[in-house]
Length: 430
Image (cartoon, rainbow, N blue to C red; front, top):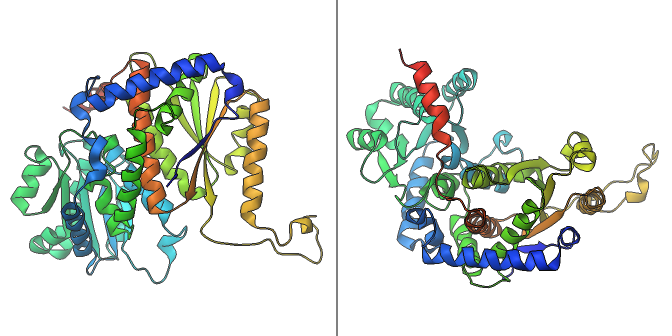
């Protein structure tokens, strides 16, 4: 099944055929290093084959999700960066837009904490938890990252005070290191159920482990379909071919980067894809931005942001490239109603689908941006379903590994992240 479609027609006018073909061969060599395990960071390549997860592992995740759902209406996921972004992206993409307000829910409401240090947010979350039946999934390899560690302290105490120590064991699941770290020690001591973050999988590539799959399963996502989509895409994205879609994407964005397009905007035309963009931003920003190089990843939600960022994209500095993420077929059908007064002059649209207007907006914007000097790459998935999202996540991960090697950096470390932590701890300690 051809789930990921890449259209380069609106990017090709900005590059020569010779430059693109050279970059594509360069990308192919990067893919060979990735699959052979001969490149930088090759001790963190466990994500490459995560879609081959066994039925037993998936069954274990589903069973834990079911246990967390019995008698619970809310599950709080504590984590930061890759420990929450992938799960949040998929859950939001596949949930009802007004999920939290629905009167009859099939699955617990999944909320997130530990991804910032807002005292107001934490206080308000604890206030809400007083009125809800809550469980917690805490995700941290070390257990000492300050944002999730502080949040988990508060949530753990709330659960223990409200339900008792013994019941807290049933309501708390830890996803952490297999052998070491503060969270692993605490989980062993308290008797929490645990899942392992593999040693060879970095946080931003962990969405297809229990890190992403357990919260998704709690929210009712069909994780087997998600994995199946990723498995299908793995076969395509690891294929040593210049037609490989991950190779093509890595090549076009890098040739544009070398021509001065330093910022890549990921633009979507579906509000449920906002957190997919946030996940993508971390994946590429943390993987590529080092040693003075890297494409800066940014995101916009269209058509909303056309009324704020559209002016700059059209007429600002010509340092932008744009990747449009498009969904071919919406899940619902809604046509525009006729109005007898026609005061807004839109009766000519009567009977036509809202999605048709959305698609024409997408096409019109792409035409305008190309005319304004912004190269456009278009990535389309057929539907917003678990299978397509699994394919999309793997497609982006593979392209990221390829692209990082093309830039000459280690895509699997993040030395710059430690700088702020050192300063913060120095300021906090007496």
